[in-house]
Image 1 (cartoon, one colour):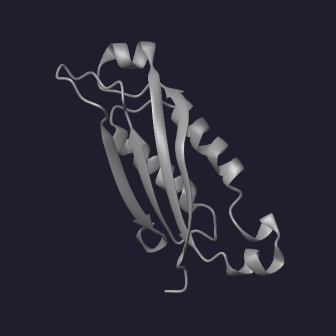
Image 2 (image 1 turned 45 degrees about the vertical axis):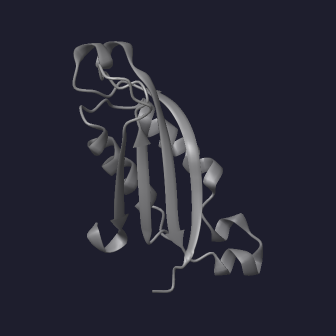
Length: 124
């Protein structure tokens, strides 16, 4: 395994319409995404060129657009979609995506609900 480096983008905020209940799909809510990318950054460190790595600014925008896009019932589905999008970047060998749903419709007091998925290129 030659990918030992990690790029992490935490706290990506985007408004989406995901959820099982009709009011979640109608009213929407904010979701927060953490993305970890596992890859080799050796070439980028050598060349000092953003073209030799994953541009995390562009990736954050891509992630936010997916969250704001087509609604799904489960954040498990959303997390899987995000992982697939990250793995579409050729350099990324593995990713870990956490979807936070801090305004989930739960009657009991809570701080956050999260789903985390880990995907590797070989699982695609």
